[in-house]
Picture 1 (cartoon, rainbow, N blue to C red):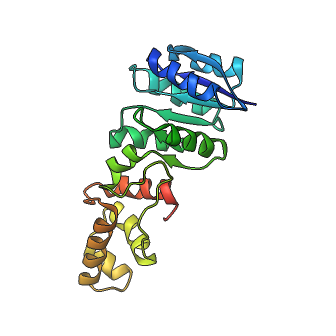
Picture 2: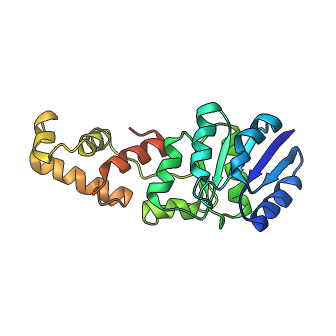
Length: 211
């Protein structure tokens, strides 16, 4: 039996998720609450197999989730939130949480996220994916990023570290023109402007372990 704890400040969301999960064989919702101040206490007491949480509805929600990850780093977590701002999604990734879906996610996507979380795999829903990848999104399936060449994977961390194209060319024994071409190809493939390449490095590494 897969036991699930729901932590969300919106009653309709909690009830909707409870109905979806409880209807499936082998799953049981053992807790449903809106006060995240009790999050760690509830996790200790109930020992759920899976936590589904929206940490962004209240100011301290993310703090409680951070504390949970420090105390229970191997807990299985799905973040389900309508907050799909890049900076906030990246904060979740930094906590080692691998599944992020919006409240607009389909039932298929919800179950895909549940399956991924239980197998310690990565999943983000199509709307979150679209926020990052300019249309390179798939509905209801795991994210797939256009393939980067070995040289492009090598160049991205150098860009992220603020190394100028001229120096990158020297380090890799390439022409300046070749480095500029690689940069343009990376931007085209991933839909990033590379204005914040550090985010790009972390996100690409998170999604497909390309780097």
